[in-house]
Image 1 (cartoon, rainbow, N blue to C red):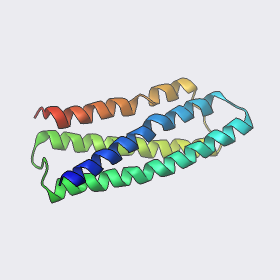
Image 2 (image 1 turned 90 degrees about the vertical axis):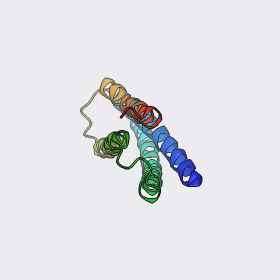
Image 3 (image 1 turned 135 degrees about the vertical axis):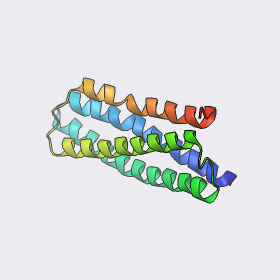
Length: 138
């Protein structure tokens, strides 16, 4: 069980590292209109999104292993709240993919300020999830 938990934490940390950096690339894409720079940033964003998606799948699978295989937190309110916020993180991840497609199609209409605020969401989500797991308020 400790190995499953270790791998879950490792893949969650790695997934969030990608979620912290990908919107920063979007900030730069929204600010810079040079085609060569845009092509470079889009390539970086594609590769990062692809890699981060694989990490997300592994994080979720190991998390499900903990939840189902070891009955960790089942029937406890903090776990239900955590799972709700995990769904929000997954939705955020998918939104990042949708934004990437928007940039690839040359249809971005949002400013770099929007992406700066958008970049703050995973920090807040991680804080909430970690607090729920550590403090277990209910």
